[in-house]
Image (cartoon, rainbow, N blue to C red; front, side, top):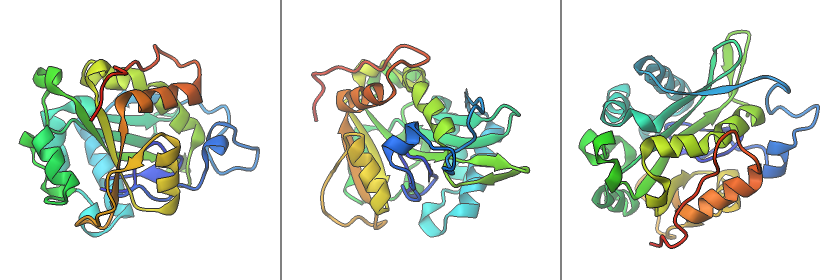
Length: 250
């Protein structure tokens, strides 16, 4: 699933695309920017099975072909490790975004990076369960979406305020998966010029120039670099800052 990683527009179950706002704009939206509603309080919640259905349906309306993950597959992922699935809600309780993280096992991550498999082929047994949290060293940001609900309809024009709330909860989200010190690498897929630019701004680098099976480039960041970048962008957060082992390397 391409469109992903912390951007203002969206990264749904498919490809990091539609990022229309640069980082300065993300955190300093002007009065006419289409990046959310000023003063609108947002909250981040661990996803329920009902939320997973919403995430899958939203992706199906937005993406096509192999970039759309079947709800059956997504639900299997969720049931294996629900700690990687989150939704953003506005003050009225409307879902307006989501974040999906897969703590993939090393052998599976390698096959995925080498384009031997695509996202749809990632099975439940490829993901570490909460009981195996001490083994998690690599995480894959499979989906990120931040929009705005207007008149009952989700508009995916980007929502800087909802996104900022999500990023401020990064520490707690990672801690639900495992001890952040364990994280050595964070992976994400880019499928657009703006998506690539955003990943680079977040300290991601291309894994290789090899064209992958899904025609989307994969990027990675060292855990400490990724954490430090988010902390430096956001400054004070709602919780403790992300702290990852500076000695973690590929």
